[in-house]
Image 1 (cartoon, helix red, strand yellow):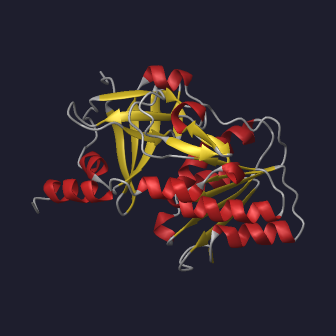
Image 2: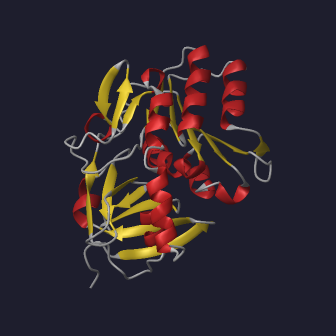
Length: 278
């Protein structure tokens, strides 16, 4: 019998990027595109948020993608199929709401591309197939290419080094589409903060409304700790309860990037301890 929060599948998609399918029937029953979970690897572990990349109500599973960048993600990378997480909380955050729009441009950068996959699939089911741009440093990091091809109206792939798709950045493709007269009602972007900032600067030139999904430092997921606060439109907002999606043209990305670097020194120390360097 499958155990609660058991890793039903652990699959390497790229170097230091793993896909985890987790048995969590109550979460799978209620989650929607755009929402996230918070997990702990063990009882002494920190609480870390991950956006749900896919789910199956029939199988009672949710899927997340994790890039190994810090202490907890390194611990998670050591786990194998059949092992169980200490706990998993969700679904958290507000689901994506693109119901007011007809023509939609989805833009994903790095493993953030996987985060726009549920929206792509959902829009296809609603008869509103979206144009999708996915980008990464190299071809090995272009995530879910075959899945996107099934549901996107048009799929554009781009890599920094030109090893997959065309050479360049997601903003290069987006600019070309907009300059040649493609009409969109909204853009939805997910990825590293510098990438989302660049997308928002571009879409502002064309007065194209843009939604971004923010994934700042987070602890409790209920708005009480204040760790995930952002400045949006000059006001404080909390990603866990007010988001995680916001008007990208109102987000203070510079502040968000500065806050993300707050505990970089401590994180590096923990990684050294994990690897036995200290």
